[in-house]
Length: 321
Ligand code: ADP
Ligand code: MG
Image 1 (cartoon, rainbow, N blue to C red):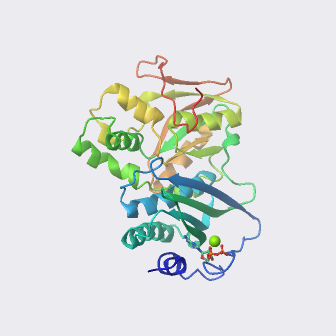
Image 2 (cartoon, rainbow, N blue to C red):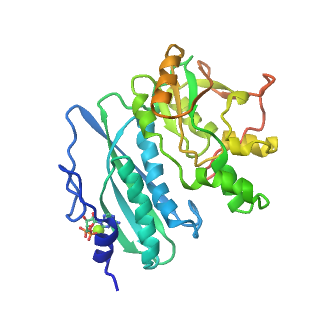
């Protein structure tokens, strides 16, 4: 029977890059380059709330880190390393091996080594907590409070696929194998836009990553920056997989769907070419979807220029009654 320490040695101990002290001591150690700040963020994923119990463990390992790397991307921070807290209801080594594979593959792809963590047994459900550390030159982080009235509003990637995949898997939509096959990757294998976030430093005024839905997440930028916004629905980069969907579920997925892990950011209109150029450089589709305004409030115009009503609310763990 493997002990806690065997498991850590087998699945979570990798040789740390030179200059870092990784798994094996009471703390990990990493240097902070002079003139840079540490950016750190943590996300907790709970079975039954953030993922289905039968999800592919490799995808889960990937996503647990991806959602955290997405936070670094949204700040324009370069990944340094991460720590992993695991509460496991049972010892299932094939599951752990696949989870660790998915986790380490993404960590390697982004130069974000696993340098510590904690492993315990839980009474019931599986819980995963990942904390990432990144570095950003002092004063250059892409914060939520930097948007200025008259900025363009941009979004990377495509919108809506993860929401549709989630509702299909959750039984909210009738089974549709083709639609699930076309959308599931967006839900289970999100690709954090780290290169785009880094390239947007010095160009974007404000940024956020889309975890709870475009309107809600953009709302955080607007509130922090004390500006409003007008968006054009016809410009939205709806996922191609959703072509042919009914208008109501489509707009709900595009404007309100969570789990996107793309970036929403604002930039001065004078920097349009620069935004397009860094999008090409980072291999990311970037789409201009609207503008910030001096007066507060968020409106979305439909294809005819009319204000859309009944906009979807984003995700909230504790919605007001
Ligand atoms: P402590 O008792 O000091 O908290 P532990 O016995 O919990 O130490 O952990 C031993 C070492 O293994 C530490 O360096 C810790 O960071 C690391 N570790 C434990 N669990 C994990 C995990 N899931 N992923 C990565 N490192 C881990
Ligand atoms: Mg411990």
